[in-house]
Length: 292
Image: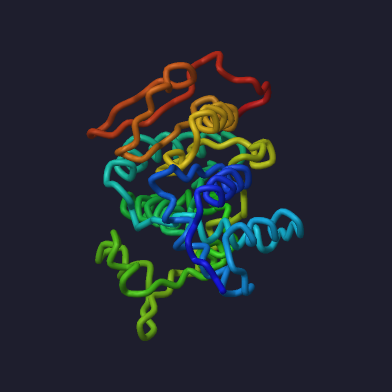
């Protein structure tokens, strides 16, 4: 007979297991997340307890099942143009500089990384923001092809959804403005389909932020928003250092508006625009030699 109760011992085992595999810290007061989101696996495998599920994971070492467990635990909260000010920073402060750099033959593309992109709203918002800026300012010599937008997430499931570029009415109501919707989407029944040109401008990759960032290359702009709040302090510090070494010399880091970045002084300088904070790497903090 299945016992759906999560014991203290089982909670500790899964708490450690989840942090080990994806960096997410499930705090004691959030124990219900493990019980509510993983109970379906007990039913699926006919197990009587969470301890049995844990033992099955450890003994059989099923990579696919581990990925499903992480998918179930991960919170994929996202919306279009989340917060207002980052997009004003992009349009008013960063895009003019990028356009000048491209025209001066800087070499290569402007590279932008959307970390923990979930179902794609953030990277697609970036692409639409850039494209509309170019159109509004009558810029014909530069296109989306001059930008490389990389979007990553640990969840294979949400990445597959993101790649489709298909969204329902509820999703579209969360942050999508009428002008963007009319310009970049078409409706088929209850589904909104993203313009193929925008969809094709984003590269989606599965990526665990605990891993080395070296394979991702350098970026001119990194959106790392509402991600670190789920990690331990040690992992946060490690990731901040890795981000530092993944930015170009004038690279910019953008966090969530409500996130408090207390330790930025070691690696970053804060800049302010319209009540928004964004961060540039301090000189002398680079470990890599070759940077644009």
